Image (cartoon, rainbow, N blue to C red; front, side, top):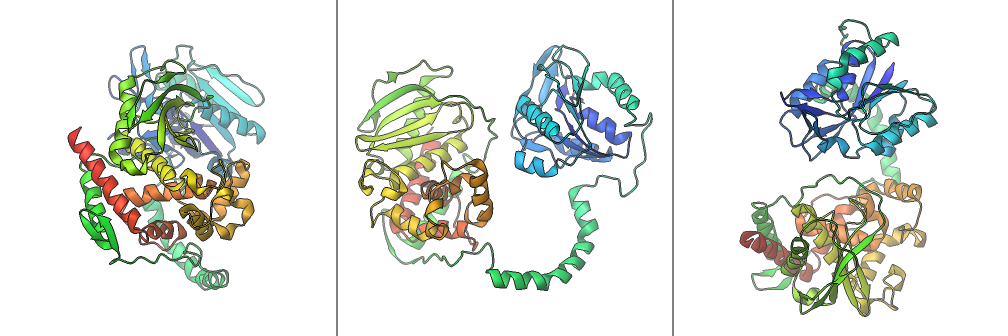
Length: 503
C-alpha cells in the first residue's frame, strides 16, 4: 500500500520532536507500506539532517517534504509557536502527478490551505482519508474522510498520543504491533545512495537510447539552446563611467562590487512567502519632489509596523539608482494584498510614475533589494514617451525604443497571441512556460516582454555574466551589449555596497 502522510514538526522543551510527522514514523517502522511524508523541513535548523536520517531509517520517504527558511515550531507548556508548520508548501501541479496513493493520513498541524487542498484532491480521486487532530483548527469532514479527535487542546503533541494513534492503525490492519525489518528493496535510502544503486541501470539504458535521442534532437533542433539568438558583446566598447572606460572593465568592476556586497547580505537569498489572497488595500501615498517624500495622503492607517521603517525603502530606492533615471517617479505608495501575490508595482502615466511597495512582503533585505531592482527595470525601460498613447501595453510601443527592440528580438517567435499572457488562464500560462522552460528563469517572467526584461535585469545586476547557451542566459548576456546598462550595473552595485557600509 502507498500512503501519503502529511504532518507538522514541532520541538518540545526537552528538544525532542513531536507533531504529526510521528504518525508517518509509526507507519514506516511498523509496516512495509511505502510511506511518503509531506511536511515542512527547516533549512535553518541543524537538527534537520539527523531528522532526515531518522525518517529514512524508519521507512519514511521525505522526498515530498518542502524546505522553508524558518525554524521548527515549538511547544512550551501550553504555548505553541507554529513557525515553519503554517507555511503553504503544497506544489499543486507536482502533487497532482504524484497523487496515486491508496490512502492519505493527515494531522491538522500543517498549513490549513495545504490540508484543505489535499483533502479536496483526495475526494476528487476517491482516495480514503484518515485525519488525526488535536484541535489546531476545525475539521469539516465529508465524503470518505474519517477523523480521530485526540483532544481539542490545539497543542500538536502527537508524540504524546502515540498509544491512541497506534491503536487506530492496528485496528485498521495498517501496521503490526511490533517493528518490522525491511528488505533492501523496501528500505528508504538516502538520495545519493539510491543514485549509486541505479546508476548502472541508467548507464545501460542511456547507451541504448542515446543514439535515438541524439537523432531526435538533431531533427528538432537542440532544446535549451539560444534558439538562434546570440549575444554580441564588444568588450572594448567605450563606457561612460568615472571608474571604468570599457564594457570589459565595467563588467569586472560590477562583479567586484557584487563580491563586496556579499560581505553584508546574500542578495540571492529567498525567503518563503506564505501566499494570502486578500484584497489590495492602499495605506499611504507620498508625493515626491526632488527625490524627497512629502506629507502622505492617508487612505487607511498602517495595520502594523513603523512608518519610518517603510519610508526607508524609498531612501534605499533613491540611494541605489541614479536620480536622472528615476526622475519621473513622483509618488511612493504603501499598500498590501496580503503576503505573497503582488510584491510591488510601478504605475506609469503621463502625469508621473508611482512606485508602490507591499508592506507585508519587503521585510528581508535581499528580497526587497531584488524587488527594487525589478521595479527600477520597469521605470527605466517603460518611459511614458516610448508609447504611442497613455497605456503601457506592449502593442503601443514606438519603433526604435528599447522595449520594442527587446520584444521583437526575444518574443516574435511566439506569435502575437502570446505577447501578453497576463489575462490568460492558469493552464494556458503554465503550458506556455512549460513549453519554453529554457527561455525563462521563472514562470512570472513568461507573462510578457515587460516582466521578461525586469526579471532578466535583476539577474543581470545581481549575478555574474552566465555562460550557458539557453535563451534565458542569452537574454542576460545581451544586456552587456549596451554600454549604458553595463555602467548602470556597476553604479547600482556600488551604491548598494555604500548604503550597507554606512547603515
